[in-house]
Amino acid sequence: MWGIKTQLIAGIAIITVAAITLLGFLSIKMLEWNALYRKGKEAEVIAAAIHAYIGEGQAAEAAGLKKFVAALSEKGVIKDMAVVDDKGKIWFVIGEGLPVNKDEGDSLYLIKDLNIKMVGGGWFSGVGKELLVVSAIKGSASGGFMMFSMPLWDIRKEAANFRTLLLFYAIFDSVIIIAVGAYFFSKNIIRPMSLLKETAENIAGGMLEQRVNIHAKNEIGSFAASFNTMADRLEEKIRTLERVNKELVAAQEELVRSEKLATVGRLASGIAHEIGNPLGAMLGYVDILKKTINSKKEAVSSEEKEILERLGKEIERIDKIVRGLLDFSRPSVQVSGTKGVLQDIDVNKAVNDSVQMFLPQFSGSGILFDMRLSEILPHILMDEGMLHQVLLNLFLNAKDAMAGGGTITVETGVRCQASGVRVKRRKDDLTGYDFTAERKETAEQKFVVISVADTGKGIAQEDIGRIFDPFFTTKELGKGTGLGLAVSLGIVQTFGGDIKVKSKAGEGATFEVFLPI
Image 1 (cartoon, rainbow, N blue to C red):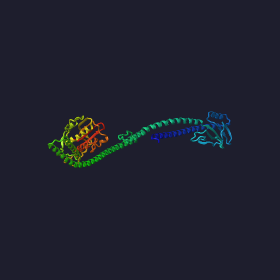
Image 2 (cartoon, helix red, strand yellow; image 1 turned 180 degrees about the horizontal axis):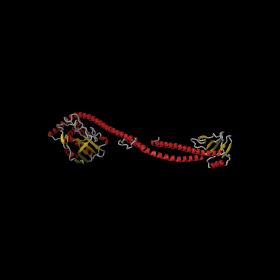
Image 3 (cartoon, helix red, strand yellow; image 1 turned 120 degrees about the vertical axis):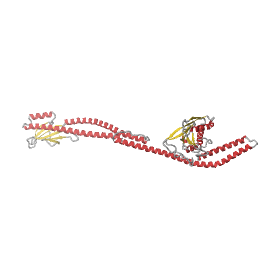
Image 4 (tube, helix red, strand yellow; image 1 turned 45 degrees about the horizontal axis):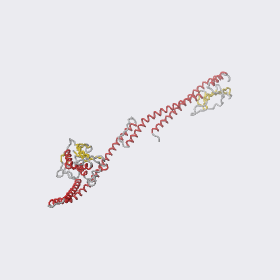
């Protein structure tokens, strides 16, 4: 399949060759006809001279006529000649002689009393072999005539030379026209079309920012401008669709997560209430046993005391897990009350207090704290105990990720979120205080960010999307319940914030807590 460039060049070549061929053919025919006309004028002069000789009444062998005709024959102007009287008798002849049939040949034109004919040749075969000139003898009323032939080799030679020249001219002219035409077609049509094709393929391949750079003031330029306008609108539509698709995916994930949290929350609440009552009774029985043992006068073995202590600790551990389930089901945050109070919190102080509170747990584990707190940090509105609980969970997770020791880097600062953070409120949370009017998505919203980074083993990429799911844990059996991060996220979201995580396997993890100012 020929390309458009090949087709255009072939078209130019065909048109050029056809035009030059036609022009050359017409030029050759004009040359031939002009040469034949000149021959006819020569024949007129020769015939007039012969008539003059015959009119003088000289004999056919008269020296003057014979000498005149012989001279023309030597010069190649006349080849053969004959004079026929009115009785059909040839009384003068020179050369090889001519047929007495004066109707032979094709008549070209008449000049005065001359009938000029051409023997051979044609429209496409060129000039013939010779011209036959027939003229009636003046003063002869009974059919006397003279007839002579004029060779045409000189015209044929001239036409052949002209054809050779025309051939070279046609080749040279065709090459120039084809080269120039191909250049202009390539520059003004082929190259812009190739650029349009390449740009369209790039856009189809995902390079939506590609545009064609053509500024020609013609149809190609207009087409390029329309193409760029179409590409701009296409890019805008695709960007919009991508954004909407991301929002739909995020909304779907959030909906699934919300449904999952709601289901697990209801389940956890039911289980916690069912287990909580027996646990309370068991703790009461343990206290009674402790008092009974302490009141006995006889000695009690250390093994019995140790068993009783272990039993109490295990029951308290179960009770802590149950309270975690209740907190996950519905965080106990109130505007005023015994469990939670909204306070104006100095974040740096709260972070320092949390570190000092949990620092003894890290003694001897080879874990160090690197504090990088911003000197100028706005206050936030939150329950301080809840903030300590969130930090505790993050510190404990960092400790578990660094079994062989490491560094926990705690950093605070202020950051603007371009799209804001949506509020996640559960029913009856913070009764009487509506966050939704303040926490809607805005162009710019400032947050205090608490960053907790460890140098541990990190989180696998396939697990990052699940670490906030209830009961999901990567720890060994018996070392974690999978509720710490889920509860922490629920607490932070209740106050209009969010928690984000960045991690790679083997490169540690960074948790960022966003709290609205």
